[in-house]
Image 1: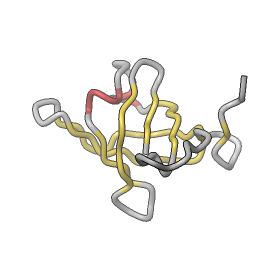
Image 2: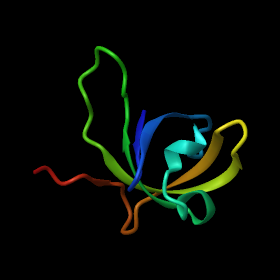
Image 3: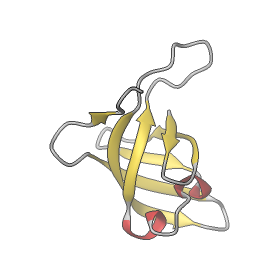
Length: 90
């Protein structure tokens, strides 16, 4: 999947059915995200040759971050208000 934060973007993969996400630490970008969590946009099924999916808004809280290995695991939660919100189209 593709992950976008306020200041960075990259890719990642869910590693559990409970919403644990594996990505690179640099994808977290903004200084507050690796410490307290942040809103993220997720584009599921982000694969070569596949039609791009509309991103959904979620909240991610870091569970483990390793700066030296540039890796992070995040617990992903539904955005406030229940279901993940779709990005408004412009």
